[in-house]
Image (tube, rainbow, N blue to C red; front, side, top):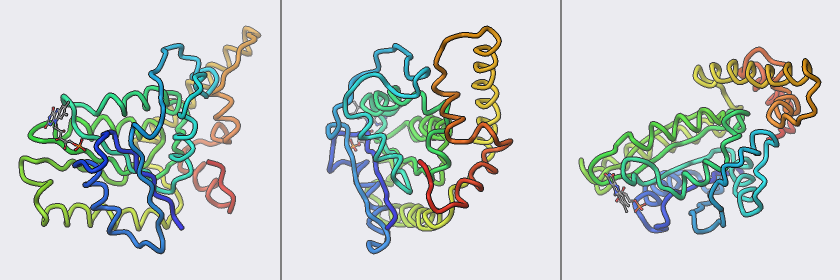
Length: 247
Ligand SMILES: Cc1cc2nc3c(=O)[nH]c(=O)nc-3n(C[C@H](O)[C@H](O)[C@H](O)COP(=O)(O)O)c2cc1C
């Protein structure tokens, strides 16, 4: 069975955003996919304290439900992240989770996982959530395979034909990407090169000045084996060659 984890940025469990995501997941073969939905109120997540220790430790120091939520995301085969538009951005609840996961943006933590980005809105902000959220997912190493907003105006949320077409296309992409090894893309490749240089430079400095400091992000790149590769694509090819994949 392939696992789909859906993180909804809205607290409305029967709301528009949840409904949009469900219109997609309901189209998937039940014998092939398990689907789990999560809402902000299901997890006790504190705000980011701003200590920036996560960048050094590759782990947040605050103890709450974050690791439980991270495990759900990492164990999934396909990750769907969705939010309503609130004042032209995603919800504060979702921002809190992403702020607390900031070190993922330096470590390509999603490791090429296929990601679907969704939003819903009333009348404006059609791209003000999908654009930044897709960028953040890419920074985190997610391969964004679909990205869509459903609005009240123009009529999409209440338009059966529109909903059927868009959710059908996204469901088809999920079916396709669930069956193939994780893939890279041009945007992740650029990030791979830049981040590899950045974390390597930190280590060069540590060695040059004989500094007694932990570099969690550099260690993560080494532990995962990414540091040894010239491209993320080559790394993923090697990683998905073996049966047992470390997420
Ligand atoms: C606090 C708040 C701010 C909102 N801001 C916007 C906005 O800037 N643009 C917009 O088109 N809709 C806005 N909306 C409407 C929601 O994005 C829209 O109704 C959405 O589909 C609600 O999703 P939900 O039912 O999953 O919570 C806002 C709604 C709320 C509650």
